Image (tube, rainbow, N blue to C red):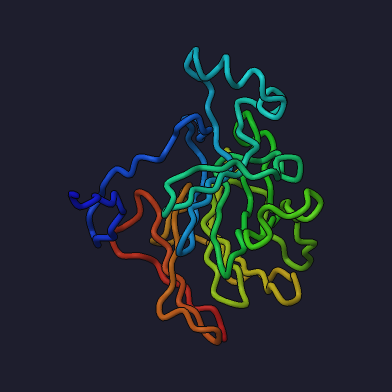
Length: 247
């Protein structure tokens, strides 16, 4: 009897490869842009997005989806992709999701997905400065428990925008930049997740860092007591800009 071949995914650093999901009669996300993806060790989560024109086959299928009929061309949906099983599942939380579903910012920590900001359609007509969470550890729970929740925040809230970058260094969620669709920002705010209170860390007043849309952020070394926040934005000078928030 010959050896059975196991078609498993093996992680290789710095290598891009296409991983085909198992789609035997199963649903999977339709084409989109402006969505956000976060992941943990086992699952990948896809949030929101936008598609102004579906293919004829996809349009016929989606016309039977009341959530899509109400929210199109925005996707009011959260998907989970299990990397071991290579299977997609749409999570039953659409009714608790915000209406600003394109160009949000997202991150994940300890099984909780954080979503900040975003735009409705047309872009910039309705933007958000709210924070939503989804506890992936409760996926599959009763409908009233398996949903997204808005954090009730206070303090120096950022302006309602989309295209922001976020970074979570416990206990703070940092929000950087964004746009209203007409004005661009490079300001930095942080939210203390223990108190749900925002504070303004940096206000852009000019200089080398030009305000841009859709930047990204990371930290080094990323300790709980101090954080160096590196922000890389499109069309900025090659060297990242660095903010040093007080401990």
